[in-house]
Structures are given as structure tokens and as C-alpha cells.
Length: 83
Image 1 (cartoon, rainbow, N blue to C red):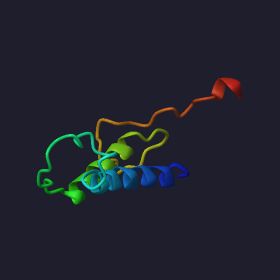
Image 2: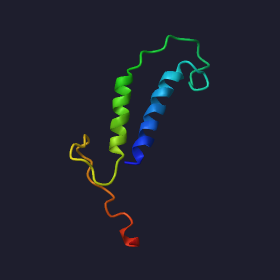
Image 3: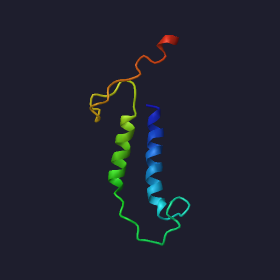
């Protein structure tokens, strides 16, 4: 579970770039365009998809309630040849 804080940090980084992207031209790649009203952001959806993405990146023994039904346990014997 040591990766959880890194995953949480990554999710927060993605969300903060969504928030700051319309306020700071050095973050947005559209800074050269005329000012337009910012589109509405669905942060609940963005957070849900970010967490789902990181759940899909897990390896090892996965929990029974894994939302990505096509994912299975993986890398259970990594390093076993090296004892």
C-alpha cells in the first residue's frame, strides 16, 4: 500500500492542473487564443476516472471487489528466480 500516497498525489496533481489550467497561461496550451469562457468541469467524474485508472494499474494480489473485471492477479512470482 506504499503506492497509495503516490497515486493520491497523482490524482490531486491532475485535478489541480484542471483547476489551474484556465487561470495560468503557462499551464494551458491555449494561451495564445482569445479569451473564451472556461468550459464547466466535472471534477467528480475526473476524480472517479483517475481513481479507476490507478486501480487498473495495480499488480500483485488484487482485491475481490476489483472494478476492472478483466484484470487478474499479476507479478506474484516476480524476483523468485533471484531467491
